[in-house]
Structure formats: C-alpha cells, structure tokens
Amino acid sequence: MKLYSLVGNEVFKIIMKKRLWVIVGILIILIGLFAYGEHYTRERTQSQIAERIGIDDVDDWREITNQQLMDLERRLDNPFIPEEGRASIQVRAEQLRYYLSEDINPTTFSAAQFMSNFMEQSIFLFLPLLIILLASDIVSKESTTGTIKLLMTRPVPRWKILTSKLLALTILEMIVILLMATIALGISYITFGQGGFKEPVITGFRIVNGELDVSNIQTVSRGTYILMTYSLGYIVAFSIGKMALMVSVLVKSTAASIGIMMSSLIGGTFLSFFISDWEITRYLFNVNLRLTDFLSGDLQPVEGLSLSFSISILLLWALAATVVAFGVFSYKDILD
Amino acid sequence: MLKSIKKAIWPITLASVIIALPFFIFGIFQSFDVTRGAGDNNGVADGENLVENSPEEEEVENEDVYVLTLGDSLARGTGDEENLGFAGRTVEKLEQALGVPIRHENYSLEGLQISEMIEQLKNEELLGEIQKADMIMMSIGGNDLRGLRGLSDNERMNAVQEAENRYEEDLDEAIRRIREENPEVLVVFLGLYNLDYSGENLEETEILLRWNSITYQRIEEEGNFVWIPTYDLFQFRLSNTLSPDQLHPNGSGYEMIANRITEVITPYFQSD
Image 1 (cartoon, rainbow over the protein chains, first blue to last red):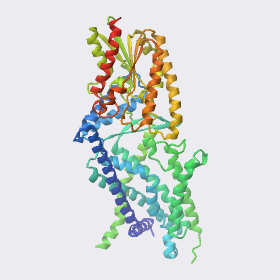
Image 2: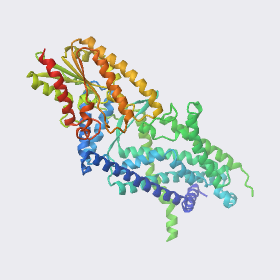
Image 3: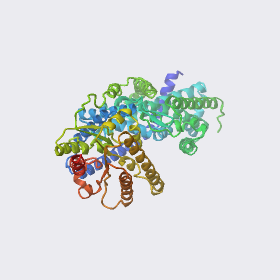
Image 4: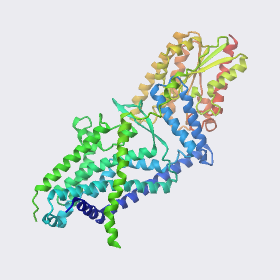
C-alpha cells in the first residue's frame, strides 16, 4: 500500500474518532470564556476610569492618548535619556501614533491582540494538553480495541504503519494550530469588533546577564507577530506530539498514556522552578516550551536560554522520542 | 453524499496544511530574525539624529536671571495642559514680579530617581550650566518613594529603612555636587504631596512625611536652600488638582505650587 493513502487513512481515522471535535469544542468554550472575561474586565475598568476623571464618555481616549504622546515626544527632546531608553520611547510613540491614526482605542482589546495573547498564554500548557489529547491514543487505541492485530497481519511493514501515523499526527498538529487561530480570530472579532492587525508591536528584546537589553528592539506589525507566535506554537505542538506518540507506543492503555504525558509536562515545569540553578534543567523539554517569551522579552525561568537553543532542545526530544517509538514498535511482541 | 464528504476530508486537510506551511516557515524565520536582532530597525532608525540636538546652542549673555530646573516628571510638567509645569509657571510669575527677562533651562527627566540625578550631576555640560545659574529648582524623590509602594509588610520594614538611608546619602551627594560648582546659587527644593489624604493608608503617609522631613532637615543645614512644602496645598483639593493619570498635578495644581514658590523667592531677588 502506498504511504500516501496510508497517511490519508490515519488522518481520516483521527478526524472520525471525534477526538479532534472534542478539541474544537474545548477551544470554542475556552476562547469564548477568555474573550468574554477580557471584554468584561476592560469595560469595567473603563467605566471606573471615566467615573474617577469625571467624564461621561470614554471616547476621551483620544485626548489621553494625545497627552501620552506629547509627553513621550517631550522626553525625546531631553538630552539625558540614554540611547537604549530613547529607542523604546520611540517605539512606544510610534504605537500611540498608530492608535490615533487608525482610530483604535488602546484601552480596549483588538482581535489581533487577543489572538497573539492567547497563543502566548497557551503555548506552555494549554496547547501541549490539546496535543496530548490528540496524540495519546494514536497507537494505544489500536491496542485497547485489538485492531492492532489486524494492522499487523496486513502486508504492510511495521515501520510503514508507524510512519503513516507519525505523518498524520504531524499534519493534524498543524490543523490544531490553524483551528486555534481561526476560532480565536472569529470569537475575538465578534467580541472586540476591531481588527488592529497593522498595529506596530515591539519585539527583539534580548536578555543579557539577566538584564533586558533593548538595544535591538524593532517593530513588526501585529499580523506578523501573530504569524510568529503561531509558528512557534507549531514547533511546540510538533515536539509534544512526537513524545505523546512514543508514550502511546510504550503503554497499552490510552488513559495511562495521557496520564504519563500530562504528569511529565506539569511535573517537569514544577521541577524547573524548584531547581532552576541546576544546569541540567535547561535540557528538559518543559522549560523550553515558552518560545513566545523570546519575542515579548519576558524573563525565562532558567537563565541562558535562547530561541535557537530552545527549539533545538525541543526538536532533539522529538527526534529521540521518534527513534524510541520506531525501535519499540518494530520489535515489540503483540500479545493477548 | 456522506461518502463523498468522507472522501474529501483527507485532500482538504492536506491542502490546508500545504497552504499554511509557507506561513509557518515565514513565522519561524521571522522569529529567529527578530531575536537575533537583525532585520530592519525601523523603530530605532531615526534615534541617532535625536541625540544630537542639545537643549540650547546659542548663548545669551546679557540676561539678568538664569534659572535651571532639575528633577523628575513634576519638574518637567507632566500632566499640565499647558505643558509649563511648576517650573515654567514660576518663571513666568517671577518675570512679572521682577520685571526682568529670565532665561530658563529644563534638564528634568520623567521617572528620574535621585541616584540617576547624581549621574546627571556628573555631566560636564550640566555642571557648566549650574555654575552660571542664579537659581535651581528641583523636584526629586517621588519616584524613589513610589518604588516602595505595593510591598508586603515584611518586605517593607527593611526596604523602607534601607531606602531612607540611601536617599539621605544620595541627597547629601547631590547637594554637595551642586554646592561645589556654585556656592552661591539659590536652590528651591519641592516637597512631596500625598495621593491619598483619607487617612486609610497611614503607613504610606507616614513614610512620605518622614521622607519630607529628611529633605527638610538636610536642606536647612545649607544656606540659600529653600524647601517648599506641597503636602498641605493638595490636602483639600486633590480631586481638582490632579491630572487624569491620578499621579501628576494638572494645570491648576502646578499653578498652586508656582504661586507658593514665587511668593517665597521674590523677596530674595528683590533684596539682591
């Protein structure tokens, strides 16, 4: 049988198994809740601000933004601002000018902001959990239902079976990312009503010796930033998926497979916080999941990480997991 | 019908993944690009030429009074609708009262802390200006104090003590540097006002008052230094005198401060 149709068959099985639809359901409910919560909080703070300043209309954001912009421009005139500070002030001023010219209220959320925030928040836990949900039964389900014996008796070599499963998984990981993007876009656009994809975003922070280095900051459009975060999300999904596949090969029951993956995901994160000065923690996959933090300049829990280092570690884990999965799957005895 | 849908699932999935793939590749490359610091630095591009424009190039020698303003955002006038701040307003009033033109330079910086001010006071250019000045208006310390807010009680105990000691030392250093350059100059030092007079935050108020008294005591040791209290000014009209950011005074807040300063210092210049 050709690999193409084998992969097609695997993809079809996963989609028909309804597990993907569970993921879609979770996404819709959670994103809906987040968006509503965000909207509610923003609206409340807005009315509080309006009350305190004593204006009825929060349309005055233009005035406040203008004031902020003027302050920033005056600061730039000051000769005593160090070079690094100057750069970040300029980017901030550029952002404010964009808000004013595009009529975007910076005190409320835009759909684009929500999209990138959602990925930044879910890349280290929520996204891996979805992928575990998707991938954990990919082999073990064949064991529990007994269909594995049917698979093995067909005139297809074992490696080809696992390869087709692996490729199907790789494809569906991307589908999950695309679903996340689509659902987040749809729901947040309905909730917030403003796009804001051209908004300039500050990025390019680096952390040197534990201090934020802003000498390299630059602006990209929010749309590009979203592309970046979701692509990094795919790398996380890719690597977690391969690990889940390996566990699924090793363990017969799907429940055990999900449990093992979840506990190592969460347990490893705890571990990295407790023993963060231990050299070896940086080679755990858990501490390398927060890829988007490199874009936004958030401090890493373990020092000395960089984007290329973290991606290499994740890909190494994926490679090792794949090797183990193939090794075990090719030679394991199928009993009972 | 159902069968054809089922048949379409795989090609549709594959097609969408293939279409999405270039975007993902672009995204990953872009991420590398950004974190490496390469790419077009359009945000910082014109940062350089801004450094070059110094505050003032031309020297005007024949003015009677030269006033210098140093310090934080209050000295800069943040929140003032007319962008004058207490410094600009005081200069205007003083000009009227004395009937002479006054030259005014503002070297203040939003968010400045006293340790940063000491760095500033090492700058040759600024020291040169200080030598020439007849009066220096200063507002500093508010940002140092603000750093103490939001600490838990335990942290606060030590942090407050430490910050007070450091502030005292830094204040001493700043005064010494100014005096070294210009033993004659009149220095007007602005006191701190509260943001909450309700009495609910007694602890913070207490720290603020102690801060004020440190400044007051230290300044009284110097001749030609004057400390201008603002605590009482804002007490009963805080809501009308703060700008929308709820931190800086608005125009009328700055006006009050300027009135008080002018009242205090006019006789000094008249007796000259």
